[in-house]
Length: 125
Image (cartoon, rainbow, N blue to C red; front, side):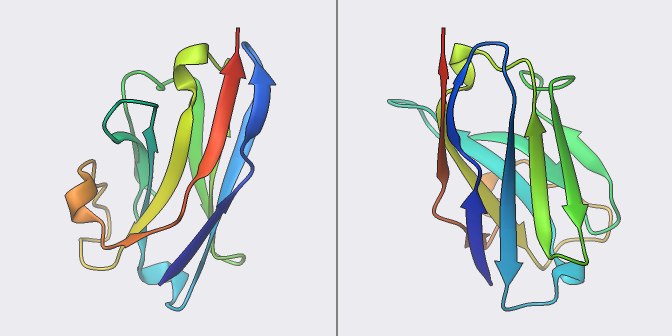
C-alpha cells in the first residue's frame, strides 16, 4: 500500500485546512485509515481514525474541530481541520491497516502497517 498525503501549509490561528491522503496498491475498501501528527521535539501522536465501516475516533485535543472522512470512489481519506491552533503545528501522517476488523479504529501507531511521508501544517499565532 502506498500513501500520499497532501494539503498541508501555513495558516493563521482560527483558520482551516483540509488534508487528503490517496491510497494505492490495495483495494481501499479493505483499509482502516488513520491520521497521526508529530510536532517538533515531540513523539508522534494519534489524531483521528476511520474504519472500513465508517466508524470514527478522535483524539481529545482535536475533537469538535477535526473531521475525518473517506471517499471510497477516490481511494482517499480526508481530514478537515477548523479552528486551528498553534499547537496543531506538526507534520501530519496518514496510515493504513488491512488486518483489523470492519469497525475497528486503531489509535496506536503500532497497529498500522503502512505510512505516508507526511505533510507539514504550520499554524501561526
